Image: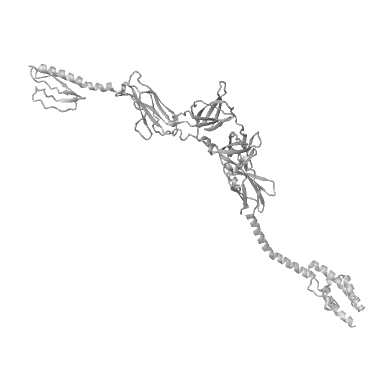
Length: 626
């Protein structure tokens, strides 16, 4: 912008040539070249400049008007330029951003801190904004608007403590503002620190009851899901200058034992949340123990597992006392509040006269328990004993399983392993993941086969048919951490059935028997024929001889000896004929012996005897007639 000189008609004139600007409310055109009473005006960055026209008048009086026009243009330019420099002077560049901005979170208390940017200046305030996920809009941080200190508390803001949040803060003074200082995104839970817990104490003669409230405000959101996950460390000492400090890990509801009566003890507690968060110690609390009780509590409480029961034992010096025992789930100790009403009477351990009692094993399911015992002489009752921690999984006894076995059609034995039959013991084995050690052997052999089975239904294949096998098993915990096992079950024996091979032999035997029947029948028939032929021949003696042998058994001459035949010959009265007959019979006998021997060799008898007999029979009547 500026002016230039030019000559026109011998007259030296000046004119101002502004940059192109937006016209605003132009005035009426001049009535004459000399008229400047109503000049047009133009807008120039908020200022108004009169439009300068070229002087075309003559030399008389024209130079003075030209000078005024030049001065007016220059003055208006300065005035119009002044507003351009004001915003620069009023901007935020003179204020610096806050430095060393930090977020401090203790329990449910949220604090934003920083260092001031202009300690020399006054009237500086600070404001902060926040931004949450899934929302790109920056919102004003409650409790942190126009604060004069270098910190602010925004605990009233309801945030999801597990989601990341962004913060920013800046300095302000009047209309001036500094650039924003952005805080890296963070999850409140990760940045939070554990504050000191609240502690309440109650004294006994040799113990102190301690009641710990978890860190944070009641109803707070920071530790809402972890209130029962805190562990607490305690430091305790006698209230004296040379006292020894002892450190213990305690439950929120716990008791500190083995203290001295009428003695002042002091302690402090801090909370810890695994794996990394460790809180600050509480203030120191002191309390004095009471006068010693007349009846001491039972000591050395212990519990043992015997077969399918637990035996609770304790020590007590005095006699003629009665005792009772109670149990409590250990997790109740981690829950804030009074748990005195949650203790339960131990079955079988109420008003017992001895220093032990038996407890059914199914009283305790899977978990950790606390057990305590109290003594009474009828008039006075002792305080409860030191609580005994009892892990049912570690001290329970596994019960042997039941076994069923049956043969299959493939010369195999199928084994079924089941839970104990006693209903009171079923829940014990169900607490564990079990495997089974199975021992299998042939009943007539001492060789055993051992195997581990996770299944409860399995088969022993490829066995001998029609053979007795026996099996027994015991339960083992699959997790080596428990290292538990039951005793072996009673053996169960079963006989295998004939297999497919045996059936084949059986069928083959039946077929062979059927085929052998005709052969055997034929052989028997031949044998009977031989016996009949030898002992009951079909040939008969001559009729003449048969007359002398009236008795049927005497008809078979082969059955009589020669002596008997000779004796029988004396029956004939005619001696003349007897001699002839004897000679004939002697000759015939020799001949028969020879033929009999020959028949044994050949299997056939000669017929010569018949012919000789017939001849003798023919001669014999002739002689008798003579």
